[in-house]
Length: 509
Image (cartoon, rainbow, N blue to C red; front, top):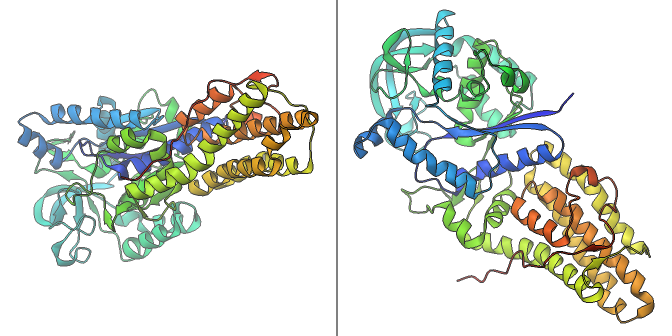
């Protein structure tokens, strides 16, 4: 049986102002997807844009264009950003896609016909920027708990989803599936702050704006974001269509990767929709923390926003990817600053990895004209490096399965650190002075090249551009995980490729 893996990011509000925090989620998901592909899985990695709602309608009015014209313009920005970050998504869904709109309409009707949706009147507090409804007990001082903006009172006819009907069933499911919500702090928050106090039925339609999917049997209403946007995870797979092969193959999702501010939607509203549709729930929802600057969430309104492409153009795409993956303990908030980015790039990418590849290739060219042979003149010191290389895949597998991304990268960089130490301990420059030790020198250089190859095979899930450059420099196509079961896949008598600096040290301005 083929191994399958379905991973999603949230579908993002289309904007010209994506910041590094948006990139954080997508870079992590991309690395997980790439790793699974390398490990022999058939992967479906999905992202996209959430394009309906009052915010979009208002923005379009301000611009003097239709909502569809507005979203078409700004969605291209997201696609360009993901391309610049080397994001390898398999599906990019837009909620304005016709298939999505048609299926959402079917889902809404199905839930209504089975009395999981009913008509009523909504009175309460609403945050337009977050598209969130709040009760007075949840919103202190009439401010949105998520963004801090002032809430407005709204009153309108609406359709409601019976969340309360599924409260006990959802709580039982969460308690009997301990890995469903991670990290555990998010799970405790959902149970104690939302489920146990009692779930109120949820407003799932609006009449105060028109930019949305119409309720098929009541054209005064448009379907609200909770059923519209959240359903993207199954509409993209062909659910409720004649072509549902992907749905049958990939659902339930293995991982919904989301920011902590939307864990509530993905672990309460979305599971209840699925329960009402009699569908299995995703295996896991992981709510990660934010990248923050000086204790504040990244935001253009706070003045700490930069277009991520400014960082990419200045420091390189893999320096940005590496910082996001390595610097922040996954699940917690992490601080982003250019100073931290420079320190991490210099310490790990320039000093450890770049220096290792540069030194090794330089010595191979100097001593053997760039031709790598293995005379197998071994010493005890070699075994430590060889054993480390062979054992690393298992460690990385464990950390990736537990979403300990930074630890997985540290496992890989341990190969590079030990290789640098191996150079200092074997002193190739001293061996080169003694013709009788030429065979030993050849073995040392071979071990270094093979160790670099081992680490780079694993690294390509995280830093694809850098890994491709390393493979070109050491001139090997032994790049698959199948070549990590033994030390020695690197072909003897290989002529190295052209040497180039991978990461130059960055001097702080």
